[in-house]
Image (tube, rainbow, N blue to C red; front, side):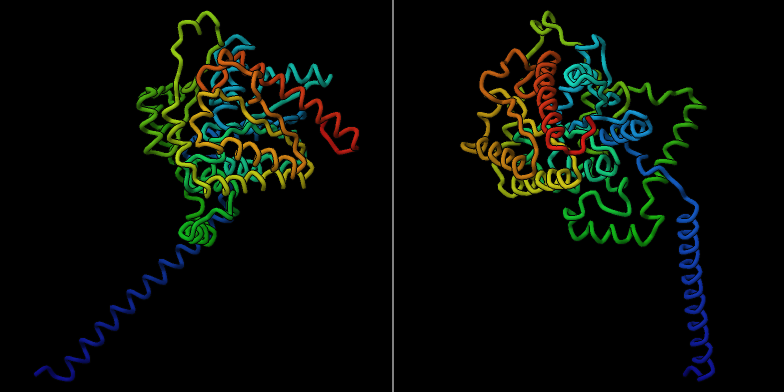
Length: 408
């Protein structure tokens, strides 16, 4: 039989072990808290920096630079790839040179044409991003232009997919919103969109500064790694080009990454267009248009309403442009859905004091203006921008007559 003395010794060993474990836990917790406090006091980072250079990153960095200029943007574009094509292909054809779509975030053609109409120099910025939904545009406006003292005219080109993409699920999961959550930290770009698990993670990020700033450590790690590899091998990372098929696979599986000169557009040539293959993207849009999901449509309509309502309250002039599409594309929508979309957009513009321009009216654009059923080529883009510039002139004159504070 074990003696009472042996039992006391075993109990003392267990108690001693537990005390050591408790001490280590307390020390570890203290070290984390002290490191967290030191990082909070000393770590100063640029909120726009990111380890993953998505489309929104490049646009936001250029926006940051534009705010240092004495002449800040007078007009800001929002929209999906339809507007990206308008800005970049329009400028490439106007300037007669290739343009890097990743780095070009202004419309020189619009500045020239609208500047002549208004009789003064103009400056533009583009927040148009491929795949942009209404919720993405709302997040961009809240996180970036809305914070500035100036009041540029907001030009938002919208199309049915931007409000009713059936493949779309969570507004908080897009590359744009995830990036803007970092920009807006510790706030949220779209606080109303956060699901329970995301709300819990956000609370941890706010409580533990080091965890909330993990993207900045990843960015620093990336910078150090690239600098070291460049020094040892001579590799220049800004010259690496990923083959398009591989890039599409990577973008589907990994965080979005766009390098300079990865997406280059060239001037439109009628001669070249004769021999160019027509890009029929009907299969993609058939997938996005069907089935019609009222929940997605209503949710995105609410974000459009929030965008326009906030813009109106803050004194921004807004122009909503219904993008031109070929009938080949709109015929893919379930019966009655296009009219539902158009009536909703028109009503939201009217409700929030925004101008509305329907560029999808019959006879305004023809197949000759497009490079596929939804995207305008360079000359078609310029035609579109002339219509928008004339509407901007009307908005400027109306604001002046009403005595409204305007940049013009």
